[in-house]
Length: 329
Image (cartoon, one colour):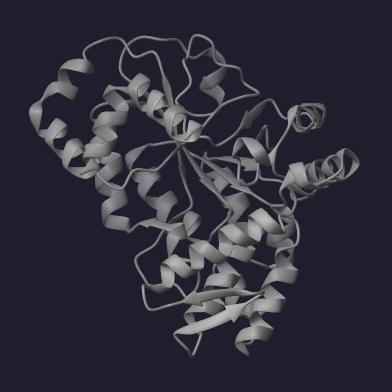
C-alpha cells in the first residue's frame, strides 16, 4: 500500500511542483554497501547494486545539489534541495564500487570508519550472525531459550537475531556470536573471509586523496550509551588517535548505530571535546538548514526506489512528521 502511494504521487507530477519552492531542509542519506555479487554476510547491509546506485545518483543530481562536509558550515536555505551522502562501517565496496561511480559523476561523500574494526579485520556482529545463519544446516533451531525458523527466509532470522543481540547485549556482540556458533555447530567466519569485505588503510587514504571525506565511527562500533563515560571517552579518543596515526584527517563523527538510545548528552560532549566539528546521528529526520546544529545532524536511510526519493526531496516536512509519528507508536 505504501509503495503504491509513493508511485502514484511520483507519476502525478505534484513533487515537481513542490520542488519549485525554495528548499529549506538538508537531506543526509545514509548507506552501507553497494554490491553486485551475493555476500556470505548480512544481505540487509547491501542496499543497492552498482547499476541501481548509479541511476539513483544521476536522478538525484538532476533535481538536487550534492554538498560535502566543508559546505555544511556555510549552507543556506533556498534553491534546489541539498543532499549529502554518507557511508558507514568501512566496507570494501566503498572503494571498489561506490567511489568510482561518485568520482565519475563529481559527487562528494563521507565515509565513516571504525579504526578498531579495520585493525582487527573483524566485521560487526550483525554480519557474523548472518554468516552463521546462512550456513545453518537445519530449518529450525533453539538459541538461548528462543525458537527460530528459517522457513520464512534467512533474512528475517538474521534481523531478529541481530536486533536481539543489540537490545539484550548491546556491548557483548562477540559473546553472542560465539554462543550462536556453538549452538549451531558452525565455525565463525575466518579473519581472511572478513578482511575481504573491509577497507584497508591504504584504501581509506586513497579515498582521502581522491577528495572524499573520512569520518570517525567510534573505535570498534560499540553502543556508546552502554558504556561508562570513561569508557566512552576512551573509545572516542583512541579512534581519533588511530586515524591520526594513519595520517587521516577526520573532522566528523557518526555515532555507531546512531539511534537516540545509543548515545547521550554526555556522549555528544565527549565527541566535541575530542575535537570533532560535525556529529551525525540516525533517527530518520531531515534537519532544517536555517537552524542546523553541526553537533546534531540527523541522517535519513537510503531509499530503494526513485518514487521514495521523489517524496523525500519534495516533501521533507511530511517525511519528518511521518518519522516522528512512527517513533511515537
